[in-house]
Length: 235
Image (cartoon, rainbow, N blue to C red; front, side):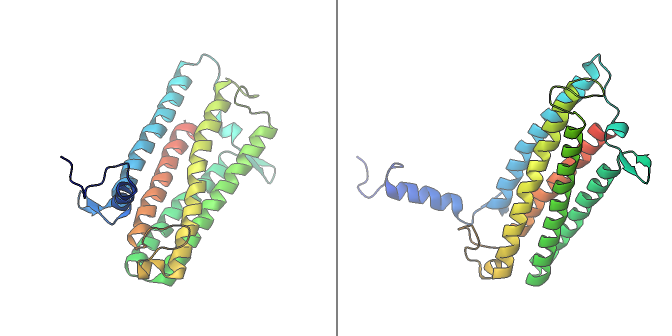
């Protein structure tokens, strides 16, 4: 016979209990629940990016048509000279630099230095936004030159599809990362992480561990770009 005081999973108390379990400050594998969930999310993202890059390499090696020369396609004219991969090099430098500012934000976060943490989070967001802006410029330039998912002026038609899919998916990750950085900076400025209370646009209790969890996401996005840069632009 069922216990009269027990509540089934379909009851309001059961639903509230489930939500409380998922949102409480639990630890798994001796790390905070939020950080463990971030690692699981990043693992799933690794599989997606790996499928994209492996598919790209398979397509490029199997195509019989000429693959466009990246040094020509992504060149910029500066002072009357054509400089290969100039914009891509600047984008890469900016994104790698943002990993440094993010690491410092984590450091000052654990020191509970609210001012420096917020400044470094905003600086990281500005670097990320600059990267996205340059990527938008790159897309606009190539679209004006006739690059489409189904064709381009320089060679095999699959080039455009691979370019827009891989760089677009990564750019979306960076864009969301910039949004999360701004939200986290607002939470830091408001003192939500010091008081361990719900903050800006979230009902989760704030802790400076959240800055490190966000840093994991940002470093992952930067690392993925290194592989895209190597396989798509340098190959």
